[in-house]
Each structure stands twice: as C-alpha cells, then as structure tokens.
Image 1 (cartoon, rainbow, N blue to C red):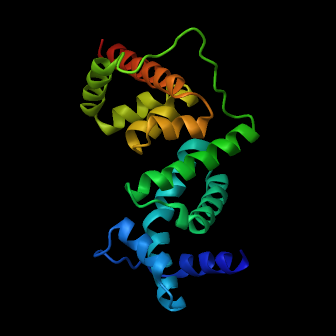
Image 2: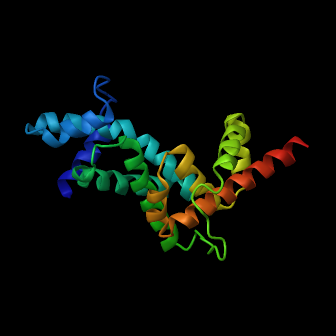
Image 3: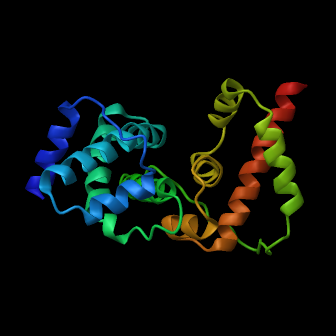
Length: 208
C-alpha cells in the first residue's frame, strides 16, 4: 500500500508521456505481465495519465467539490491498480474504470446521505417494453448542443442524472448499473426511462 502511494506521488510529478501504440486493454495486459520493475512503473505511469483526469472530472460532476473529488480520485486510482488483475479484458477498459469510479462515489454519497434513491413501486418494467421510445430519446439528445444538454442536465434529480450518465456517457450495462446502485435491472430500466422522459420534457419546454 505504501509503495503504491509513493508511486502515485511520483506519477503526478512526471510529464505526461503516453504510448500511443498500445490500446488501453493492451496496456493493462502488458502491465500485468511485466517483470521488470522499471518497465512496470513506466507502464503504470502511462495508465495513470490516461485516466486520472477523466476520473477526477467524473468524481467532481458527482460530488460537486474539488477537494473531495481529488480525494476520491486518489482512492479510486489505488483501487484500480490493486484490482487490475480482475479486469477480464473481454470488453473495453474504460467502462470497467467508470464502474469503479461510480461505485466509489456513490458509496461516498450514501455515507454522507447526499443521494436519495426513491423506491419504484408497482411499475414492473418488461424487457423490450420501450425500445422505440429509447431510440427516439437518444436521437433527440444527440441533436442537442453540448451547452444546452449540460444546462438541462442540471435540472434533473441527482439520481436521474447519475443513471443517465452511467448508461449513455460511460457505456455501463444495465447489469453493472444495477449492481452499483444495489437495485434490480428492472428498476434501472425504469429509472432510465423516467430520466429520458424528464429530459425530453425539458427540451420541449425550452423550445416553446
């Protein structure tokens, strides 16, 4: 643990040097198989610089505090390095990073009682029930300008915002979201539908 903390401090002081010839998945695989400590450290430094900033801004978007976001980013990166061996390599690396990031931030929100996940009752969501509605919603959202989308997002409930970001910005599966939020997949789909519907209502109200 102490060695990893020292490495993190070292990485922050280094210039950003990335190996453009390795994909994220290849980089992780190379780190796990590296035997030379110097090479391994260089590869870890590359991984740190690829994701530290993205993790920080994701944390900040959730907790709304620069200092807390820095602390959470530090903890998350340590968790990622410790758990690299658990990454299966069968899917893209960033959604795996995003899942750890959301899980850690949401645990913090729950601990601080800053996130309210309201129960959904008597609204069982059936698979395939709203596929066409989702396609229409996604098309509407894709046509929005970034500034407009960001402004409308601020009007959503925190729980709605988080689940939409998980799914459509970071590409997490419904199963992963359900695991992080500790709710059923059916409940995740209903929350996604409600969030999309709310966002589209805001778009329509703004265009009137």
